[in-house]
Image (tube, rainbow, N blue to C red; front, top):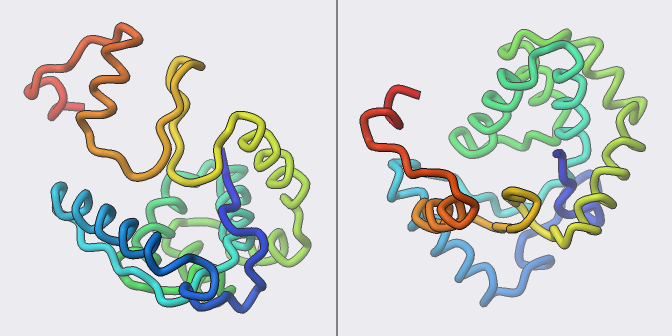
Length: 174
């Protein structure tokens, strides 16, 4: 489900320190860096928070074309690996082209706010479930796991709902 994390951020973005308390950011950054390193990722943290609405709209347009997975992967690469502002239309055009999405159609959808009502409804739905951040996972309609969490937490929750743990050989072949 799409979730607009900071809808109050203006289109030009805002410096991170204006939005998030320094102590919170230090804890969050340390946690994200630790988890990312444990799985071999190097995430570029941004100095500015972006308004994610254009990005979410572009992703929804891609979903309608059957290209959501490709678009999502390209958006994550652009944002986390390349440190690009994925709310910027020129970046979205480039990402859409790499994902095989109709670039002109995507740009029109974003400009027209075509998925605005849908995004608003999904945010309301998430808030009703108690979701206030990303990532968020609702497991078996019973457990909510929010934020970047270690793998063993997911293993424990899945065990509680009766999902058997995979052996390492079957997990690596998925």
